[in-house]
Amino acid sequence: MIFLTEVDRLGALLSDATAGNFSKAAYTQLSQVPFHSMFTQSILGILRNRHAENTHLLEHDCVFSDECLVLYVGTNFTIEIYHWLYSDTGIHDHNFNGAFQCLEGEDHQIEFHFQNEREVFEGLEAGRLIEVNNQIIRPGDTQMIRNQDHFIHAVAHAPSTWNICIRTRADKKQILKAYHTEGFRYALRKDREEKLLEKELHELALESLDSPDLLHVFHMLGTKPGHHDIRKKVDALLVERHAIPYLSIAENTSRYLNDLGRLAKSY
Image (cartoon, rainbow, N blue to C red; front, side, top):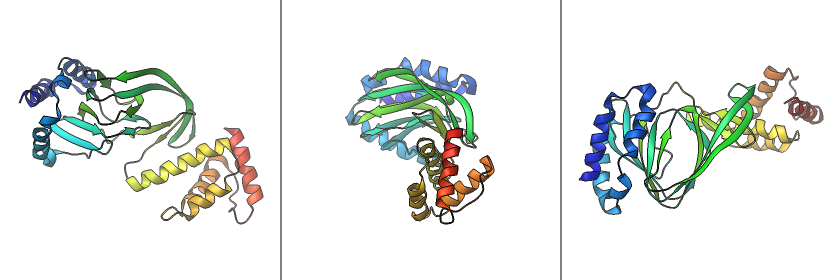
C-alpha cells in the first residue's frame, strides 16, 4: 500500500539525521510527500493494523489526541498519525523535534515568542507572550516542530482533523511548559498528580496578581479531595520567597490578605 510504503521510505531516509538537524530534515522530507492525497478513511483498517504491530516498541503514550496510530518506530524517532474529533490546545511547547502535515480537516495555529523578564518563583516565569504568526494549516501543509521555546503554539483543530507527524523520542530531561496569555509560563511535571498540583498552584499565583482577596480560592483548594496540602504549600512558598510571616487564614485573615495584596503589587 503506497501510503505505508512512503512512510517506510521516509523512516529509512531519516535514520541518519542528527539530533540537531532533525526538525529541518523531517520538514524537508515530509513536505515533499503528498500524504494528504493518499489518505482516505478506507485505509484506516490497514493503518490500525500497523499500529497494533508497533505498540510493544513504544516508549510513550499519546495523550494529546483522540486517536494515535504509530506507523513507524525508528531508533530515535517515530512516525505517527493523530486524530482529533474536536479540540483546542492550550499554549505550550514541546520536548521533541520533528514536523507534521495535515491530512484532513484544518488546524488553526497561533505561534508565539516568550520574552522572559523575571522568575516569580521556581517553575513560574513572568514576561511577555508575543504572537508571531497566525495561520490555517490545511491538507498538504507541513509545519516544522522545534523543541522547548523554539516553537510555542496553540492549535484549534476542526472537527475530525487528521495529521501525520514525524517526531523524535521525548527528551525526558526537558520540562514541558504551558503559557498564559497574560505573559506567564509554568513548568509541567512528569508525574500526573504532581502536575495537577503544580498547575493549580501556579494558577493560584496568577490569580494573586489580579486580586489580593484569595480567601475563597484558598478555601476551595484546601477542601478539594487530595489537594488539602495546597494551602500549606502556598503559605510555605510565600514565607520562603518573600519573607512574609506565616499566619494561617483562620488565625488572622485580615493581615494575611494585606500581605497578599502587598505581594501582588511587588510583582
